[in-house]
Image (cartoon, rainbow, N blue to C red):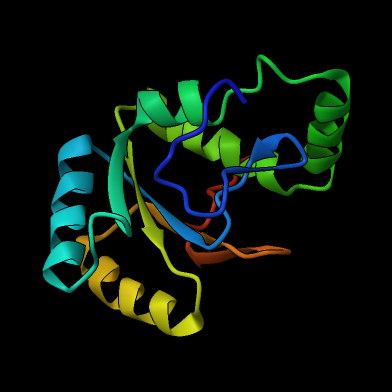
Length: 150
């Protein structure tokens, strides 16, 4: 990772890949939408230290970048991509960012925190939302992929 964001309470990487443990990451079509969702979560009682929006450029170029990774980190990243874990999500994030999208991070260490966050988040209509658990990534909102006609 090039940089780490002090906002994350429990670090932001695992096996050399972006992995903000106990956070919900929600993607939005624009930074303005992410900021609106951030304000709504604050209105619902989340604090500055629990919710934060970020531009797509910041997330993919600073948080998810692996330019400084060593050979071991790159090997672990390859394995993660091969088995379809973190790297596949990074591809989704990159696509959203390239299209002007932005992100919202919500600290949700417990299932109750997650339910409370999702109750406030769902009406904001994120493109997707996922939660980084200690041993898995939970899809909370994910659109079905459209398969091209063959």
